Image 1 (tube, one colour):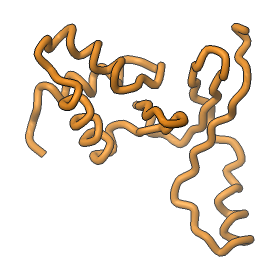
Image 2 (cartoon, one colour; image 1 turned 90 degrees about the vertical axis):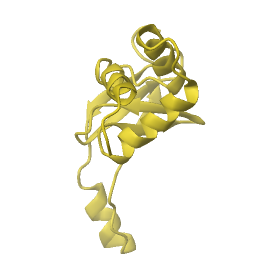
Image 3 (cartoon, helix red, strand yellow; image 1 turned 30 degrees about the vertical axis):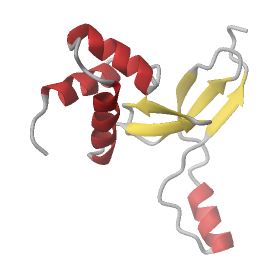
Image 4 (tube, helix red, strand yellow; image 1 turned 120 degrees about the vertical axis):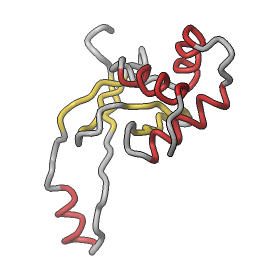
Length: 120
C-alpha cells in the first residue's frame, strides 16, 4: 500500500485518543487538518488501517468504534455514558476450554462487559 497523507493523519487521530472513537468523530477531527476530506475517505482509510493491523474495529451494537490498542485486552462499557475502557484480558483459559469442550479453535477473543461506571 502506498503512502497517503490522509491515511497517516487518520491513523494519528485514532492513535492519539483512548476513547475508541467512531468514524464521525475521526472525520470531524480530520476536517480540522484536512478541510476537504470526505466521510467516505475516512471510512475507506479506517478499513485499510484495520486490514494492515494498525487499528482494531470494535462493534458497539451497530456502531463501529476504533481502537489503537492491538495488545490482547477486553473492554468495560458504561451503558449510561457510553464510555468504552480498556482492561487487561481476563480468563485467558477461555480459548482452551472452548477447544476442549467444543473442538473449536478460538483465534480471537473480544469481550465487552456492560454496566455502570463510577461517574454515575
